[in-house]
Length: 239
Image 1 (cartoon, helix red, strand yellow):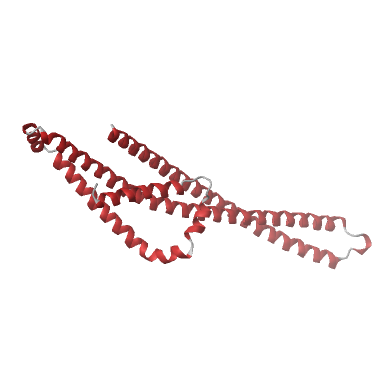
Image 2 (image 1 turned 60 degrees about the vertical axis):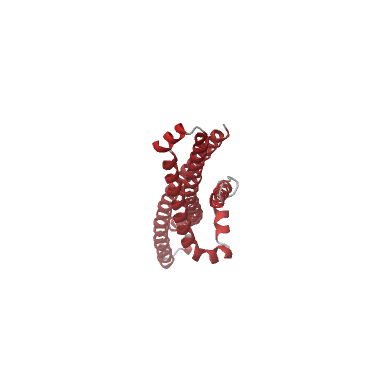
């Protein structure tokens, strides 16, 4: 294996290792997001897009070169030459095997490079959605508790208005209590609207989290299929 294909194979192994680590179930998306926010990544971020595109171009060039090699050694002319010169048969098949190996290595490296970036993006989106959903849920719980408190205060004030306080009850006291009841009713209506809005936002974020989770699971399944294909290709090579 030449130096360039050794480097591509090493790059493929590194990609597989990183994806396996990213898929570990006991590391949460929020933990990964905190890791991605370290200062070292902020320094690398400005070079990330250029490096990503550069690596894609390199892998595409190597993939096309591998395709050319496969077509070259699969041609009918080489088959005729191999029949005329039996000693060339093994050499031709060795060249074809190497070309096919390089094709698989470069193709899987290119695909996993795109998958890895997509997985990192999904992890960040999932962590953001979880944080937003938690904040909205806390806000909704607080609004719900405030609404219950206002309802209890409203009931107490109504009972005070109906029962009165015997001889101490006055018209001025009743007016004050009525104003307080009106104010509490308005605050209760505002709290109910805020609670309803919060529940709607929580439900929307929950649906978004479910969509992100489904996309994440789909990428995991594709990654498992790729690992199975690579293992099958390795078994064929050993045979």
